[in-house]
Length: 98
Image (cartoon, rainbow, N blue to C red; front, side, top):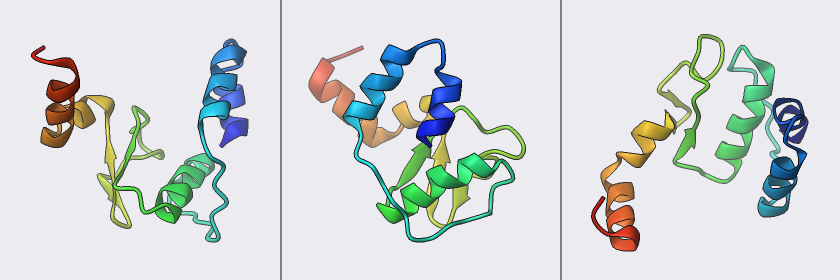
């Protein structure tokens, strides 16, 4: 996954460094091939390894995260995620009325 981020964020190495220093490395034991764009499978493997509820992505084009759910892990756009009632409740609690 870091290799993919290195390509995507090549023009922003400082952002990549912040991401790498803020995350914990995941080594899933299961390798999947359920998403056509092979690197996206790594995200799903990690999500399943940590029992994540969802993957948040804008990458929902055909061949990427083009299903609403993979093995119980929901795929949400950032907009759908921030509009979840639980997220809205947290936003209200920490930031007050919008």
